[in-house]
Length: 361
Image (cartoon, rainbow, N blue to C red):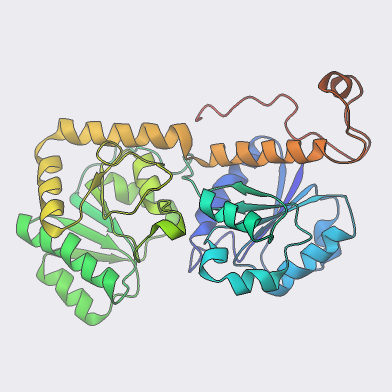
């Protein structure tokens, strides 16, 4: 198939956390023989969609582009059109989603079950399928030959308010109390934050390109995750991408809690939960003192990610959805035996004729 991605950027992660996930899905589709195109700023719409079988539009795309694509799809049956709500926009900014007018879209790819249910119950979309962001296991993987140089690593930007308070309690305080060799990668750290980190002996290493993140994780014995803002059940409770990537790298993870209402990960087995600074201190002490315990937590988390939460799994979901929708197009009615004998009609291609599951699945 020819698949077009419309997104803010596929190359830059700046203020666009979904870029890593989209790159991983694009790489997976490309490896399976599909032709994947990415349009950042958009050129001529008709030219971009020429010969395309599937178009996927990210929620950070310009609202005018979202509207125009929906209108274009309404005039033709040449391709399928999906809207990817990675940031739960219908929950956080419903008016903006309504203004985008998704009537011409074949399906919404939503970041959680409750989000998809809301798209359907409010009549905003005709179909909605759960499509959570996942780790690119081609990039985020263990690097056993890399030497451990740090006790703890955290990758994240500074944000004032509750997140800054959590950082002080769950990273700076425990690092000081245990005398840890800790490193922070991120941007937007004001001078007062830099001083706090330095006073606690925490190294601030600055912004980290995504392709270097596996190496940074491999050099630490433990990774810490502190969500940038409180996560609640209304937002679906899905984990952020960073902890999935740390687990894919085979690094034991200690995280501030989120209400994982869909039970995507197993707290206490896939990762450890620290609600307070005291709990974080004890978890870090235990993991650093017992390599066998740390290895067991890391291996359990990695197995879960490789079994459920990789870009290969999301590519499978996308391709299965396309096949399902193609079967509903006019001219494809009939039983499976008839379809196998005569194949799809001219101009319609089955995207997964007999494609095996990814070995990462």
